[in-house]
Image (cartoon, rainbow, N blue to C red; front, side, top):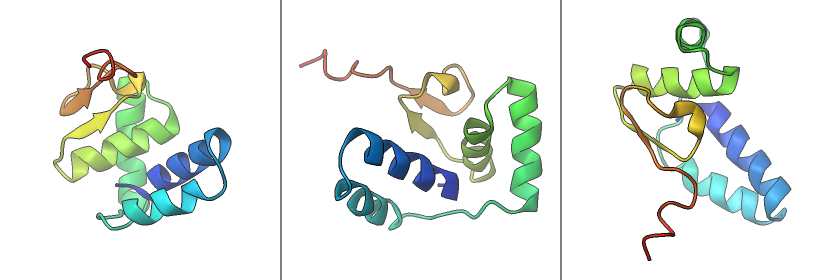
Amino acid sequence: MPTITLYEVFKKLLLERDEDSAPLVVAHMKQGKVVELDADLSILAARIGSDCKLPAAVGIIYACSRQMNSTLWTEDSHFEGLESVRYLPKHSHHSQK
């Protein structure tokens, strides 16, 4: 995952939960592979973001996923319809209970 994902999750948890949850979740995330935003990834993200009309953070996350040849699982509608993305609308998994 790109470092911007850590930023996005940490910020969201600070806003929606509490000061204690954010560091714990991010520590768990850091157990996976964290990819630094370097010049090559930045340029790839700009190209993909431009082609797909994506906001900056979304373009970076998607470019990292494509660079790593991985499947991106998300509830973020910005990614809906993109190649190698498994999009689950928010709360759709809760309605199956």
